Length: 257
Image (cartoon, rainbow, N blue to C red; front, side):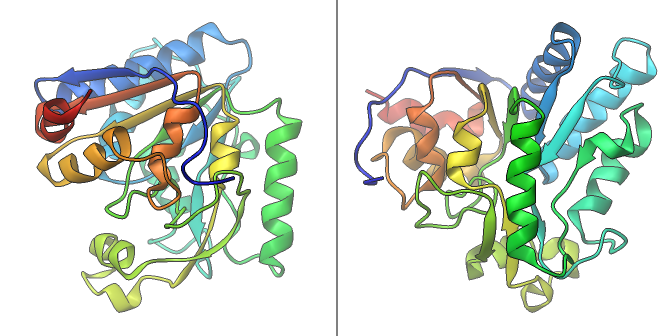
């Protein structure tokens, strides 16, 4: 797909006063999906923002207001070379922040296998599993400093599928907090859903908070729809919700048309 082509779609952009309000709006939207769909299929993400959202979902579960037993989930990505037992793996992250605290079946909580013998075959199996589930209903997204969604570093084709990618040095530095603040310890490769895979979800929910995300949010939402900023692809989707706080939204708000 040419990076500059495609019709732009309207987005529902919600700007909250505080990060906590943004997290709560996102958690409530995910909870509504779980309650309203008989067998919900969720696309899940990792990161500091997601920790707060998952904590709120766990609270709803513990209060008796949310049942995960019918849900299936697919995570966006995983580091190549890290087994699920590794404390820095996204499999471990998801168990720590969500899966171990709710009644979702372990067989339905899917994360790419970063230590599969054949990583390309694992990516192909992941695509098949998503399709067999009926497709992702609600896909939760963050945005990285390079504008990536999942680990779709620029440039990533908008029709790309789940695959093995090399991580940008900016991304490795951004993610180094989980690795003793040593970027060199962050794996150089990862498995990620492709942009095309993400765009097939029926509803995209992107959440970003803080001044540090303001510039890239502006590029993604106001700049060209371009493979140089993977997150700009969400503007081609028919059903997108973006939840920001004032700090992350202020440059976008000043420049929107």
